[in-house]
Image (tube, rainbow over all chains, first blue to last red; front, side):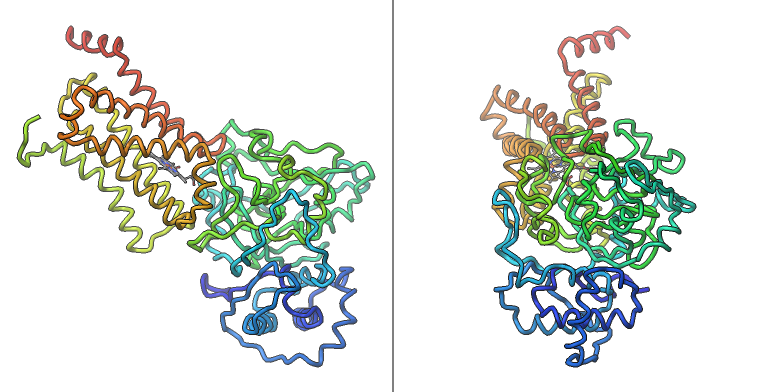
Length: 387
Length: 204
Ligand code: HEM
């Protein structure tokens, strides 16, 4: 659709809320939603905000600035912070334009609690708050970079060769078996998943444990929506995921030092979090093989290796699943793997990261900048131990 | 050693040119904008890898002479070692100046608290000491100690491989190939083995 480098640079949702009033914001979302005929009405938070919208709608002008490249700050702003007028305006311009951010991503923003009634971030005192300097603005990472720089060891450990090796990866037909402690176990074809669950666009930061990061527009649906359909039993506490392991297609499987198949896991409340996505596409197109076709997990507040690719099995269990990296090197990779600038990996300082496409490092944010949405999940835990 | 005119053997010329080729490629890629997705990491890895290869080649000279009685290669030890130091310096400069942008708080946690980086730094310091004292002047000044000092090249080789082993993820095998080569080279230097080889060669 767009040529690389030419698309409108944008920013994703969760951080807007505090910088423009919620009413305005919601109006903009709704306008966009009407034009896009989004079918997100099923969302509780969506329904909740609609009445407010109607009141303020008349005040909005609809003049867009097509084709202009807008930058927008995505900063974990506190309500006390004053947004400079320019930024404020460009934010509004941007939101009106909404080149890439669709209702899905914006919806996410609306779902976040408004800044006013947020208590000062409910993070443990033992966590670094990584506040201070506002983070630089987030821009979408170039599409070419997203599809040509992949950690996918089933193919190769060389990030820039995965794309070539995964070129002919067969991702259709494909089934995902959902089993274990659920009332309605079921094996889904990918096409069922696409048809049965509301597909959204979500623009998330992706932070690799190797201290680099990207901003990627995903398409997919929430894991929560799938879980609701299969109904985990009351005993279920964790979700276990498994990647395909097909030696005919994946030359990296010959490396016997890894306990294939790749496995990952989430605690059930993490799995239900609204940020947790099952992605089926990126940049508006079906997932390429190297990015985990045809369906992968995206958990944006955790290091990238938690976001398991090419899922064939989802199992609900009452035991913490053994994840691949934790199995190989428990001192380096924990089960939680939350992005945390205060807890270093033995090899990489996690205090900063390089955003692909930028030269200067940026500070790494607690929970990758999603503290507002997820910090409550870890209240009372010592994150230096449960890393 | 007596002072010489500019009379390089073809082997020496080849060594110089060969050592400069990786630099030429790097400069070419910079000039033409032929970057990878993460160019800083790319250039860090390329300079590091080149420094290691040249260091191992420098360490290979003596065993090659032992095995094949090919004295000419001994003259390559110094230039190869110096080129290794040269690439290690660029490697380090990229780390400090480009990757971490002289941000010393970050550098402190990235360099002084990570074992792979401490080992890399130690390697770099050894190479620095060896490069400074590589001149004929220092050779004369240090006399017998010069030889002892320059035995540190072995240590530099070992530490460079350890640096590499410690910076890759579990299950990545590349550094172990270098470790195997280094082990072979060191084995060939064990006096008893060396002697066995020379006597065997003398007999045939
Ligand atoms: C002076 C201090 C040094 C520092 C701070 C340093 C730092 C680094 C860093 C940051 C990487 C990249 C790690 C990654 O992104 O995965 C690296 C890789 C590497 N370094 Fe160093 N290094 C140093 C010295 C050396 C020296 C002296 C040598 C060899 C003589 C060396 C050889 C290598 C090699 C072989 C690699 C891996 C290349 C690859 O994976 O292809 N380094 N080093």
